[in-house]
Amino acid sequence: MFPEQGYTYEEYKETADWLLANTQHRPLIAIICGSGLGGLAEILKDQKVFSYSDIPNFPQSTVHGHAGRLVFGNLNGKSCVCMQGRFHLYEGYPIWKVTFPIRIFQLLGVETVIVTNAAGGLSEDYKVGDVMLIKDHINMPGFAGNNPLVGPNDERFGVRFPCMSDAYDRGLRKLAKTVARELGFSDFLKEGVYCVLGGPSFETIAECRMLRKLGADAVGMSTVHEVLVARHCGMRVFGLSLITNKAVMDYDSESKANHEEVLQTGRERASHLERMISSLIERLEHNNNVC
Ligand code: HPA
Image 1: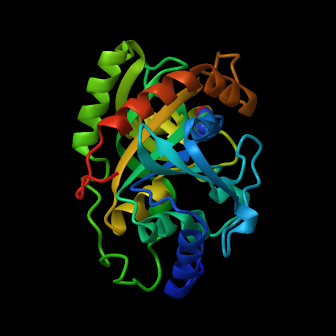
Image 2: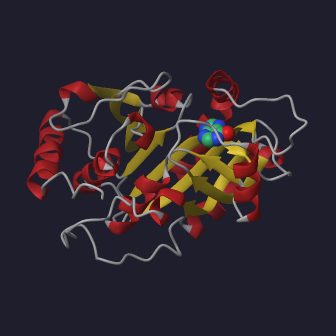
């Protein structure tokens, strides 16, 4: 039903080697910027920027609010690579294209992936502008067999049946809570379960009610596919959802989800998110301690 894995190991290698040959940066941290959160990349120092269209084998980004650039640079003295614009199922990409950059990061030597997204809040406790640490996910497309790890397994990346019960690193979540407390951000920091759907249509009221009953705190159209591939190839994951709108749960409600609201909330909270991620990165430790 779904196409087989579309890239060979050699193609992943070709892209990673091309990047390594074209930048001096050797990042241990990758950051994926969600809708309206591309400004995170702007705070990197000593930047080396590549348009996706210039990188061999790289897919192109088509969404308004996603720039389509890979930005290498230093944040608090640590070498990072930042995706300004990610790929989504709703753009029509097969799932293995959506997650292509993740294996590139692994081949570049990245050890920690920070994923961010814009999401609709399902939990009654959530307000617009809250930031949710992702502690777990529900992979709806995966229930129907659309998982980026479907197809022949390449053992050079990871095992056939990777564990996902520890997908979102507990130590990093603990550190993020400490950092948020120190920055005075505890009021809007939440922790919960992110549910991915295929999109691009926003959810119906009945769908939102169902997702809430299933244990989801926030809903979106990204992130989970990338996390599956990152965990498969042994990278640590830290995830944040910015609650850009409240999912509509009530038939009497007049509110409607829309992409402009998503981008506007992203702009309003961007500086807080930047400070939090920057402080988190400052405190990150890696195996070889040279970040
Ligand atoms: N639903 C799905 N995806 C989203 C939403 C939403 O309400 N808000 C931002 N991304």
